[in-house]
Image (cartoon, rainbow, N blue to C red; front, side, top):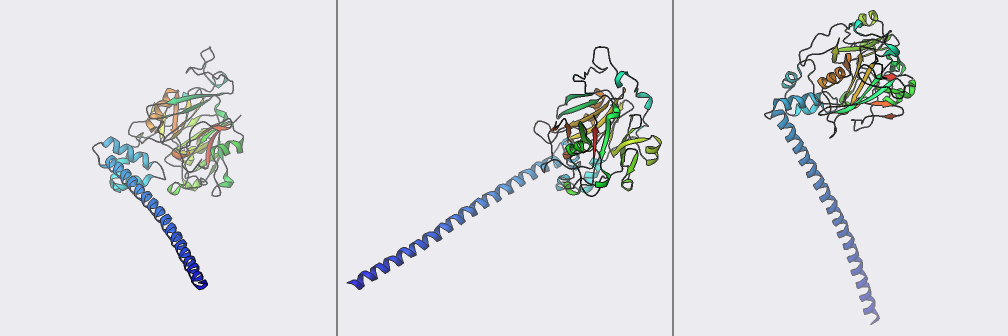
Length: 366
């Protein structure tokens, strides 16, 4: 009897142990199946999303609207990170034909159109406002004005004293590191700042340490081997902004003190450039200009957002003319477009990887 009970107990223990092991295995298999199913659902979702996006891109590129196609191609091709999207449905030859534009010759800057002798560096109408109706309420010499259009919103800084605008650039850090707009302002003690010229940016992941055109800081030329770029904008020793400079000889002849290469030129001698030379997509934008009284105009426009898709070069030119610009040029845009003032960014960054580091910045000094 004792043997029978012992045998029964052992048999029962073995059976319970076996059941426990089976249950654990089944639990592991169940968890594994759940994880596998979740991964499969995620994979299918990603594939469907990719297929949907490709379908949208295909319709934009191959659909009936030539305007939509050209706008899409120019918009993505103006950024380093997603320029490849245009190649998904179009050949290199087709893209080149879309991007081709008639390059207009930029006239030499007529310095006689800039009158730096107006009271306090600005024209006034006797009622506290300048000739364009803007008032420096707090007396800091900087007027902040919101700007907007059908597809964009942003800010314009009117800097009444052009001599306060300098270039943020650190020659010793070329090839080593870049700076954010806020870091440039802090490094040089500026009260306001925007991004400046372009930089070497392979696939949108450059470190912002190398300008892709030459730079002028304090009258000295740096990175001269990089070339002057398609368009160069520089401020001379009298505070006059020159646009469309094409050679280093011109930089020396005009005694340029601060400047970068980028472009295109938006306004020259009071006239907007032709529609052909201002063809572009919609993107975040940055621009610099100058009124006839010498005040410097610094504009940054948001983009790649539901509330602000971005601006075209033509949009920039129209805004600059509306603010009285005699000369103006486009600066680096896209994910670099940022405006900083009094300790904070005024607009929204477009970069998903955070605030971009850049090699140059236009600063407003105290």
